[in-house]
Image (cartoon, rainbow, N blue to C red; front, side):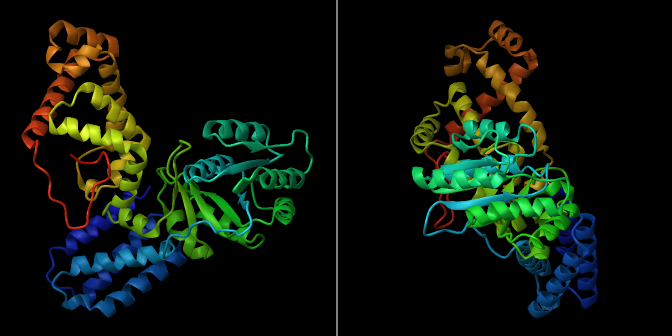
Length: 445
C-alpha cells in the first residue's frame, strides 16, 4: 500500500546523501517535497501540515545544517515524526478483571467487519485465550451463516439466535453463555449500514448497553482512503470508540487512511488486516510501520512470523541436514509449506531492509512458487531424496506431470544443485551476528 510513498521518500533521501551539509533553504526544499509526497499518498491535509511542522521543529532542534550526515539525520527525524502520526506506541487490547472481555465490532457495511471478527478470534485463540463469537448482524442476508462458517474455519464457537428480531437479545444470550462456559473473550459482530445514520447508532447503543464492552473497535476499509477517516470521525461523534481496525492494508490504495486515521481520530490503530487469509490480522505497531514506509524493513515482525511458522524441533533437524549438505527436494517442499504460513512472499520480502531497491517483483515469486511445488510433487520419493538421478526421461515425465516445460525442470534442478554446493562450502562455518542478536528457528544455518 505504501510502495509509491516509500519510493518518493527514498528518492528524496538519496539526493540528500550526496550533500555534505544542509542550508536552511535546502531543508525547506526537502520539506516541500515530503509534503507533496504525503499529499499524493492521499494523506489528510490537516495531518500533512502537522507532520511538516513537527519535522521542521525537530530539524531546527537537531541543527541538521551543521551535521556531516544530513541524510541520516533527516531520515531519523522523519521516522520519529511518522511514528507519532501513526499513534506513538503499540496499543493492545484492554484487560478486564471480570471475564469475559467484551469486544464490540462496529463499522459500515462492506468494511470487512465480520471477517475481522473471525480473524481477531483466531489471533486471540493463538495467544491461548478462549474466545466466543456473537452473530448480532440480523440485517444483512446470510451474515449469521457467514460468521458460522468463519467460526468453523478458525475453530471458535459462534453464538446465534435464529429468528431473533433484536440484536441486543442475541448479545445478552452470548454474554450469558460466555460467563457460564468460561470464555475469556466475547467478540460481538454487529450490523452495518451504507452510511452512518440514527438507526445504526441506536442499534449499536442498545447492544453496547447490554454487554458493556471493554473495547469498541471501529473497522475501517483502508482502500477507501480519506472516506475511511470521514467515517471514523462520524462514528466518534455518536459512539465511544476505543480503537480502530484497518482492513485491506495489503491493497494497492495510496495509504493515506492509515497515515491519517490515528492522528485525526485520536484513537489508536490496534489491528491491521494484511491479507485475505484468516491469519492475516496483525497487531499494529507504529514504529514498525514507519520503518516499512521508509524502506528500512520490519525485521521484528518477520522474526515473529518465522517463530510461529517453524517448529523448533523440525528447524533443528533442518539445520543439521544443511550442515551435512543432506538437504533434499523433500526438505525444500517442507520449507515451502512453512513459508506459506508466514504469508505471501511479497509481504515477507517487504519486511527485509532495502528490498524496495532490489530489481525484483515479489508478486512474480508468489506466482512461481506453485509451479515449483507442482514440479517437486511430480517427482518420485527417490527423485526427491536424490536429485542426481533426475536425468533426461525423468525430467520429461516431471515436466509433463506438472504442466511445465523441460527447461523449467532443468532450471529447478540446476538451481537446487547450486544451493546444495553453496551449503556444502559453508558447512561448519557460522555467520557472525552482532552481539545479542539471535536468528529465530528456521531462519539460519
